[in-house]
View 1 (cartoon, helix red, strand yellow):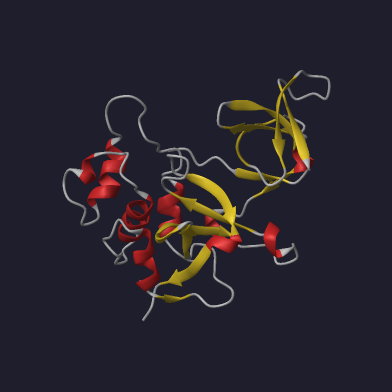
View 2: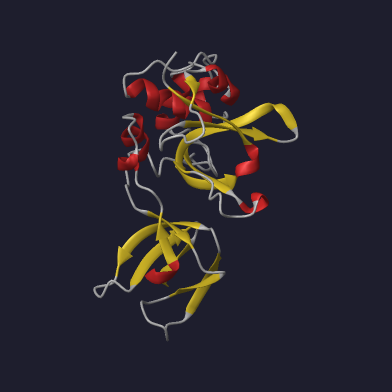
Length: 222
């Protein structure tokens, strides 16, 4: 699996060009706080080739900030999760057998655990945690993680399990691993939390979410 670096756009808008040159044609553009995968770097280090969905091209590196690496985390499951980046649901017929493995690490019934269209964010977290030698929740319900381990406190370390609300359904949620916490210097309504997780736009990837959706940070322990 890929372990491409992930960058955050720090300019208000950023052109994506066909080649590493200010005169190269513009293929598209990115918005501030967009997260992109790094694919290559120019020989002079001034340009990064990046990917966001179908958009692939070159951006000036000074407008990109490297998102915290998994090695910053004290938790072994982050290396496991990082190695899964790029796993995604199959389009058309068939199911990705890797996602089926995630689902089968939970107590889901066999039919539900056989299809990659079954909601699988919690199954991914459970699979990674168990592969790292910890006990998970064995549940496909994201909010089951609010009862796992203990509260991480005011400064959760990278790799903490993060549970998000999913409005308007109070019983629904999302769960992933903390990559980058909210920037407290920003206005509250602009704060973001960055997660490495599964079923994020149908794939294992790093994505940013409004910090207002945070329901809890969890780490191992009584």
